[in-house]
Image 1 (cartoon, rainbow, N blue to C red):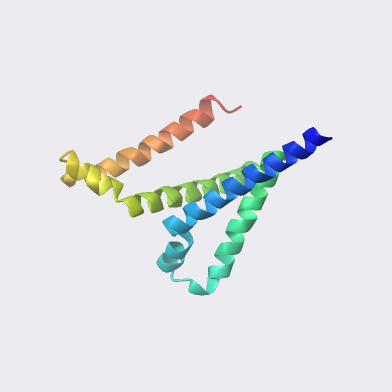
Image 2 (image 1 turned 30 degrees about the vertical axis):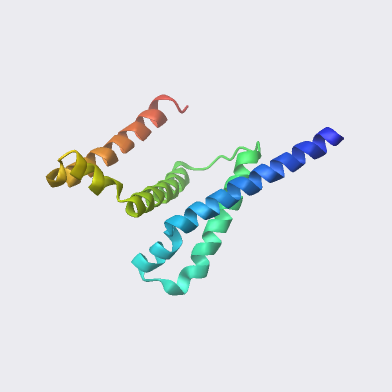
Length: 138
């Protein structure tokens, strides 16, 4: 009995730590305010926040549940697109905050080739993801 209570407390503490880190990460990067600014949709701020909360709760539920769902391929493609958009926005926000690519291209003397550098990274990410899904996912 004490073992189960201890496991529950450790799980709760770990979840709170990861959740706080995720919120801090989103806050530092300013993803939601930047998305609102770029899309000029300040009236939908609550909808953005609600979407993030529902996404986190849904992801948590799906991570811990052993349930399998048979979904048509088109819905899986839409689901994957949402994941890709989120990861892309996260990476773009991180590079915008840190100015990683302009600094890197200046340091290695490739200022004129920044667009080609970015396209190589994007195409590498796409081909790596496709390779993983085609070869390793059954």
